[in-house]
Image 1 (tube, rainbow, N blue to C red):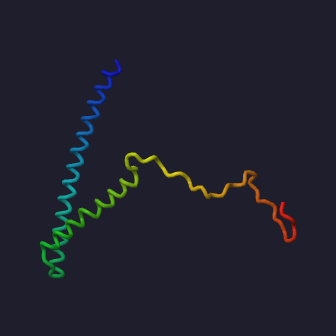
Image 2 (image 1 turned 90 degrees about the vertical axis):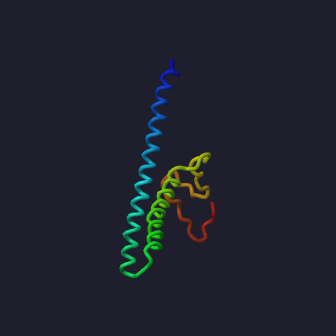
Length: 116
């Protein structure tokens, strides 16, 4: 039966989705750890060079190192995938000029010639 074959495929797909979700969480945790480490390095440099408070600099730089790239990723994903329920690409603009089907320019009318 067809239903028996689909059950195995659905089970495999569900397992693949679970694994990808776990992988996304690991990537998110690694990005958070790297932003904390990079933020600490930036805060240490700011503290040594300008005397800025370490904790505040660490907080702000870590937040920026995590949120700014995340913003660009979300923007790219939203641009690539239309929202659910969207009806595809927008219709073409209606005021476009039609191309001449004969692929030549119309004859030039000089002054004083009647309109045809």
